[in-house]
Image (cartoon, rainbow, N blue to C red; front, side, top):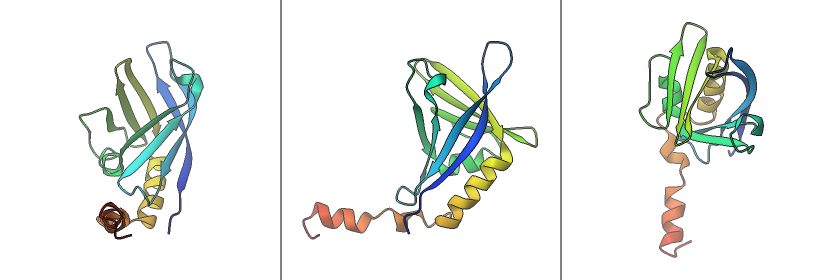
Length: 137
């Protein structure tokens, strides 16, 4: 099964300018890449006017619903009972967005229905990749 899971979410961009504003974003999950989640943002929020995509561990997103998680480019933490904050660190600076925790939980539930936690290795296709590498495929 190679179902792609996409879920539109509304995020609030937290900026140094007065008041956060709403931005559409998309969470993506593909069983063919079972360890990763991608979040896509529209061009209007980027510095150079192009769409922005971030990839990070599905486990990071899950852990960040309960406690601060991540020390790298992507960090996730709860913000009260109903919100989750995500930080995206780049050379240009830090972008912070806030989204509904229920939206994240719903997305993760769909991803875990497609690939259960702990069974990701079975979806990586390592045997096929090794066979191709050694010319047996």
